[in-house]
Amino acid sequence: MAGAPGAAAPQAPLLVACALGIEQLALRSGRRPGGPVRVLRTGMGPRAAEAAVAAALAPGGLSDAAVIASGFCAGLAPGMHPGDLVVAEETRDADGATPCTGTGLLVAALARAAPGSAVHTGPLTGSDHVVRGSERAALRATGAVAVDMESAATLRTALCHGPRPVAAVRVVVDAPEHELVRIGTVRGGISAFRVLRAVLPAFYEWHRSLLLPRR
Image (cartoon, rainbow, N blue to C red; front, top):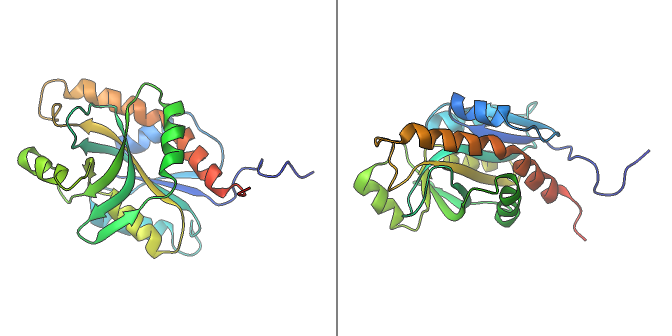
């Protein structure tokens, strides 16, 4: 028997791409939302992200998947703390900007999934190396709220393989007043890990909401 309209789980898969094993562990060990979700470890850096996402979205794979780039990031704005969430309005790098889909839906879903974490929105910029000191301030001057190495490449590659919803959600592990080289890094990393464990149900809610019929 058919269910009520809009009640069924989405048939198109959701691909969540992250760079590091610790990020994949957090995403996989959190509460599973149900539905067709794959967590892909791409490896570190934009070129690794491009190759892994292209392979995952090739014909015969997850060619129709929505894509979220996730994992940890460096916050750029003063007042950010480890464990804060960043929802990208767009991702940027030297190859251009990629607008994200359904930012407001994600912000609302993350507020429910991780109610103790601040959520920041704005441009998420890409880098091919770890950003420190004055370089962080220079990136902030461009309007970006955070930086990571893979999100821009991930979303750009996803759209090169066909139209689809794309988004980037990162957890701050390194911020202007809380750089990784300082005492307290371990505690900040644990906070970020715990938040990353909580976000997968929000990703599924975003995915499902985008696929529901519009009234």
